[in-house]
Length: 96
Image 1 (cartoon, rainbow, N blue to C red):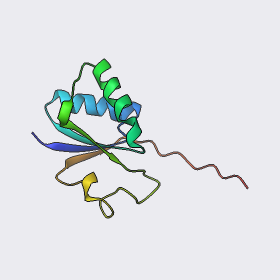
Image 2: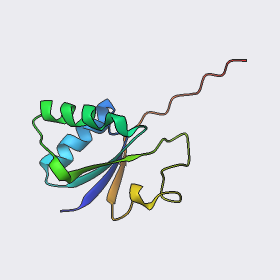
Image 3: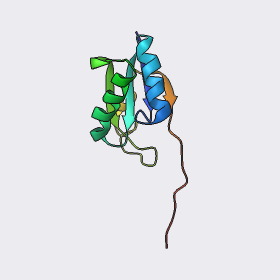
Image 4: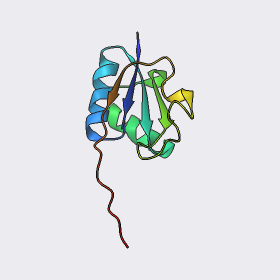
């Protein structure tokens, strides 16, 4: 059983990727901007028929910041095979 890193685990595509990976007996490590989203993601996966238990872990990281990524925190990618990027990048709106 391999561990797969899925970025954007609280999003629509990311949560579907996690669901499929768990169904295929993989362990999943996913990034979310805030660890407060963990309960929401787990509830969403339960609605999809999965009970990941300890096969799913969360790391706080934001694609718009270096904090939480491998150079700052090896927890995000340590021992992960086949990373999946599932977050849509949106342009920042600047106000002056």
